Image 1 (tube, rainbow, N blue to C red):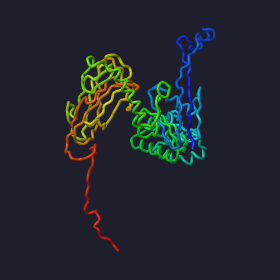
Image 2: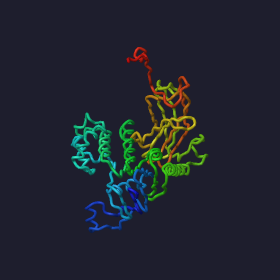
Image 3: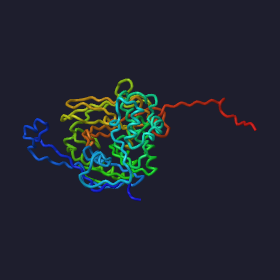
Image 4: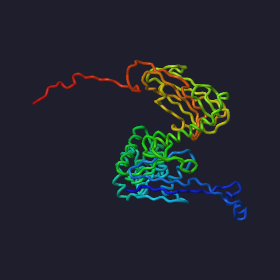
Length: 415
């Protein structure tokens, strides 16, 4: 059996405007109805080749601007390549920018019909699946309201629900697996696994490297529009992470110039963490809390030079380095202000449901596209979770036991 998707020597170029080129009709007329310079071509993608077999899931990784979205749009037929070719054994369906297909003045039900037809189904086929789509999206109470009244999460859930009821043979996924709450995400992932089991070829573009490493069969790594690496997913992801780590280490100042000599700490130090405190439920600095209690991680960040866009991460890990909780501003949609002077950041965790034990706190300040670390500080602080020890596992989940002896079976039976 041949590949479901064959990409051969693919290339896409865009015209790059120079500073002297007219950018308005008036400037065009004033310049004599012509350009003053020859436009330049910028290759967003070039010499990219790969296959995806039926039932295979291929991950696509790389930094922002590496050409991932251009590749997906070429495969989805949104754009035409300037070089190479794309061959498919079936129509291609894509989970691309789920919000864009929703008309705000139409109801959720009406949008299901419109988007289902646009995805290639007959109207009758969409109508047969409407109830299943509504049930999957968990929007029965709002389905006849205008979509403009939906939250962004509700719109994403509706778009995903429509897309996964088309029964695709080739599916393109662009950063949409984090739709809704954890339970809904698991339902989405389960549906994608169903597609794979039925022989659907899947291409996933994601910045969630762990997701690519654990869920994809193979991965390709794009850098500056070209294929930098390919192979089994865990190996390719590790190579990509190694490249980012190497760039961070290359930018790390000499030890004599470093902010601190803490073991394992590295980063470009353009901005840095100057202090970290663990704050307990009483609002006081602490080295320990009780299991299930609230906690605040308070960071003081200072710039050596101004930064307009950046991310912060806080992770709780065991002493052996196993990460138990990883929170970051990018994943939570938090836009941090430009850093021009000292800044204090409070990350409040309403319940830290970890078993009693000793843990370390790792913090990081990152470039806006996660290319390298400004300051990665493992074991920046330590935290003891108090309580009765002796349980196994990681989490301390609130729970209750109830024993009703009268309701228990007596062992008697009637013949």
